[in-house]
Image 1: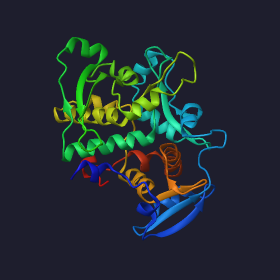
Image 2: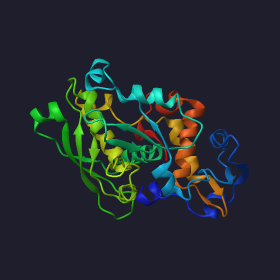
Image 3: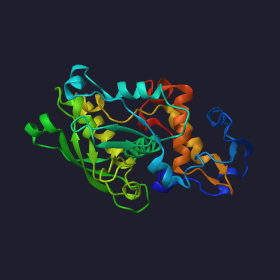
Image 4: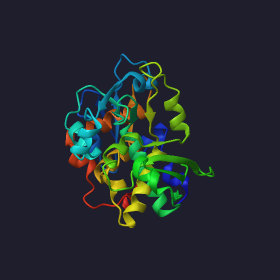
Length: 312
């Protein structure tokens, strides 16, 4: 399968709505259920706005919008004592999603308690999609880190080559830093400082946003970095090491959540003033609403499904 067929999404009215039974709904309706229950020959047109009126555009929403913050411990010692895993914090946070739209999921570093790390649910799902592509068509390249002594304390710095999502574009080559690989107490801290230095379009967009607090730029994760982490964790698991997967900073994506995202990108349009496909901010709002509606179990647990089997 070509990259174009795998990654390109419809972006015109005809591509999304033509030949389908088009249902109409409003922002105040239960859009999650309406989208989730769309049949193959159905599409949904949302009348009105999903982004709150106080934000003039999606960029402002991502900069100033509410975030779902993971409740990290107050000290390194507490994190180690509790054997803290991100999945524990995510399940807790996903059970307490507020009524207002959510722009991103965020958490502070367990090393300095001031560096903010952020990702959108939409980017995590796109990362899973890239990883799925890599398992079938173009494997993610992973260079081994030989500095084991450093790895025990500070995690591994691993150079990766991740397929781009654009036809004829080269791989994205970058370094994933502080990847937990050793089964010691540091794994309960290192996940909170995992970082990649990819500089794709998504990353350039995120870094163009001014920080909420002057001088404190957050660490934003892009889909390529999510895909790289998943690939590194999968390689370690094949070697009998489950540490990297055990403390993955991102939520798992269930088949049902992946299918919901697919419907948002292929069979849903919005008409705030003119008909168009959903933008990333609007998708992310509805993805958070999905988690709020159905809970972490339906969103995060794959029931032994493999990402390589997902059909996008």
